[in-house]
Image (cartoon, rainbow, N blue to C red; front, top):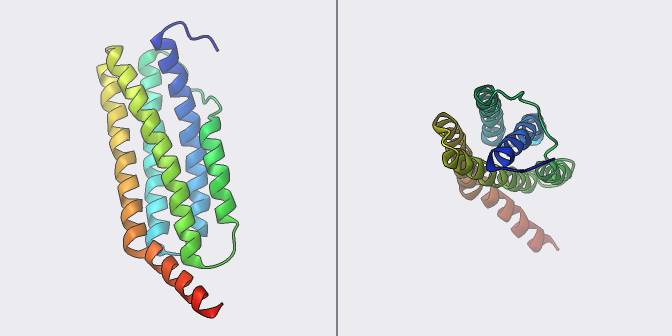
Length: 172
């Protein structure tokens, strides 16, 4: 990889994001299958559909740049997904597993929020107004997903997981 300009870095980061979106689309299927709470399953599937839209926006940006939308291995999201897969393979209390799935999903969201915020700033500095709009739209959707997961955790899943912990303490 050769980075001589901010434009080079911008394109490199977009390729990285393309791979992140592709990896996350597959991971969200698995997480939805493992989730016990219907609301969580639905949240994962809704975000999976959004993720497809995020990839389409990236493809549009690549087209505007005259670049091929190839995915460059995103090692950061791979590690986050691997940790999430460990949670998905766990056995035990359903609420506790779902709380772990939310934690994994939020790690991925925070990664994407940082990445999309960065490339939106690069696009702005490079005068790529149309790209900025597309990237900020995705950024807002990632933030909204994070808020939804927080709400679901705080009002339902983490509460139930804490109750399970209370039951365990009384039994031991």
